[in-house]
Amino acid sequence: MRKLAISCCVAVVSALMLTGTATAAEDLKADLDKCKITFVGSKPDGTKHEGGFKKFEIDAKADWEEAEKSSINIEIKTESLFSDNDKLTAHLKNPDFFDVRKYPKATFKSTKIEPKGEDPKATITGKLKMLDKEVEVKIPVELEVGEDQLKMAGKFKIDRTKWGMDYGKGKINDEVELAIEFVFKR
Image 1 (cartoon, rainbow, N blue to C red):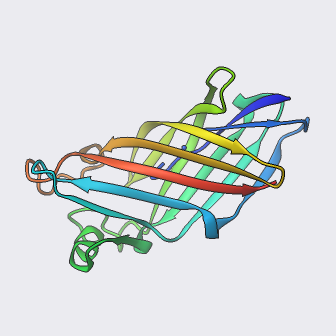
Image 2 (image 1 turned 180 degrees about the horizontal axis):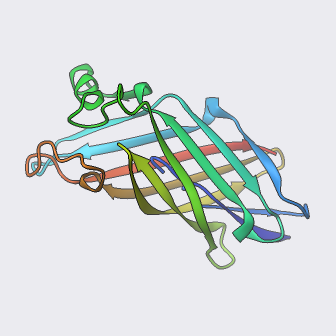
Image 3 (image 1 turned 90 degrees about the vertical axis):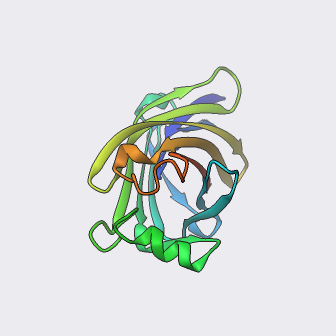
């Protein structure tokens, strides 16, 4: 068995490690009905709001021999943003945050994949672009490899102010927790 780390986002954004026997890079097909990109925003008083994105595309390639040659790219449709509060969802879509009319997409492009020992874990490093600003992020991921599918899950934090989302500074925490759950058909 050979290990492979496929770089991912996204999102916001992922790292991906696979075990397999193929010898050439291969396209992985995401089962988008089973994939999720979610976030949790919070305030200093402990109040939290959950949300995510309903529409996104994933382009992943696995090199079963050399993990470093694998890649994952994600394009998120920002208009598909949702949260646990309708009023908050509308606010997050306006220019104070995602400005979805001006910036209809956010992207993640992997730049590096680092397998973590013998465990099915990896770190994906890549560029997350939102509001026309690109920032490097690192995403630790865990993998579950099955006969007919590969599952990848990761949690990480970003500082929203690095993309110019400064609204509510001091009243809203700068750090936002992101989570990805991707399923690829094999």
